[in-house]
Length: 578
Image (cartoon, rainbow, N blue to C red):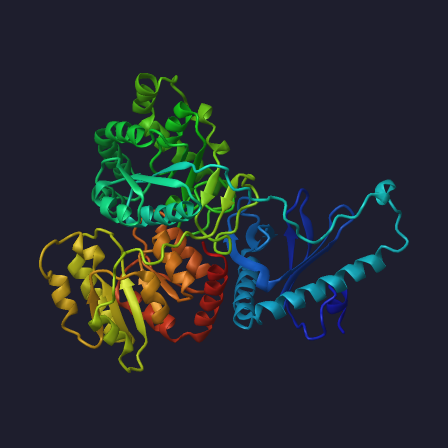
């Protein structure tokens, strides 16, 4: 057994691969050595005031990324673990930092690919922890025992501290949201769950979703607005750009009064308000009605230094200060856009005084995030009332839907080529014919078969068979064109998925355990694209070209290790999904 194995209490089979000198960033930087081995990343510093010892199994690592650091002298990287702890390391040389990053990234990927069954992996970690505790107890012999040593030892076993108590009476919930179908669907799933518990539910959103919501037995109220116009502004203008601000202000100037008035009507008689933060106005209604208020979203909107606001994801990591700043800028920009009219409405209609962003104390608002903590672990700087609840899946979202016989025949056809799904949701694109051409050429080059959903095209051209549908129909047996298809039915039957990176579609692909290609257009789609790549379960292509898409299709349709990792992620999500 080597000194490395003895010191970190690792098995003889653990092979040391590389050693780097760096600093572990704590209150005082701890200068020492980082050890990369087959299954662990370990650190040791023996300074008098900066002693540190750290051992992390690669299977507990979620993300490894390069970071900017202090000026041009030091160069950083961070390691995010499943226990929500983010470890920061600094190197004196950019070459050394990049070499360490590459070694960590590759070994993390290998460790995930060779991961044992969950039960065996957990037993292996527990055995290692037991050996480590025994080693620490041996080292403690002869040390001075502190005066409070007689205090009881805290149990290492997790215990249930919060007991759910069902409300004694039926409550009325109103959910307020704006945006696309993907913004509405999680609330339908939530309301159906609440209704099973005996509560009454209402959703206030755009008129085009009225029939769909009422099909599920949920009350509907309108907030006006055109989701298509919202989509156009988001796709055509980068967030935080001058054009986006100008176009957004123009749209909201015409709509904000209607949104406020109709939302106030929608919440009458309700006892609890749950709102998407994109709607922005529910907090004022809850204050006037004196009812509990929650925010819910399928992507993180709470200020943190761990990652940037999903609407401001940069091409390269900018560091913790940048991450923190993006949330502040976004929140203040939104408030400045609606403050005047909102305060006028508060005084004239709600009967409460005007307010400011500081007085609203939005950091105190409880959040219910409808995504999995195994995909986005809760950052350490989030407060106790910020909850990641897991995904809110709506199975059979289209009541009465049955698969087309032609679609079933296409899936069941005997062919060695894997089937992929390609669809960009309800995104409005400026050149649907051009995108269709890229899709067709990429599919033919990649030796795959494709089911192409034309939702993004149909918003551009209504009526009979469009030019894009005609182009797709020229390749029978290779390309099947559909208007729409429920993801929960289709995704488990195919090899991989290609989409825009909407939170709901991303969740459906992850749940099915399918490798994913994301072509983001705006907002949080870039955030989810990065997460898919970081987790080793897909590709993010920011420029949709034949070369980029065909290369990504070849990877997701042939990489068996990627499929294994994606399947593991799917198993975790399915085990806890609501």
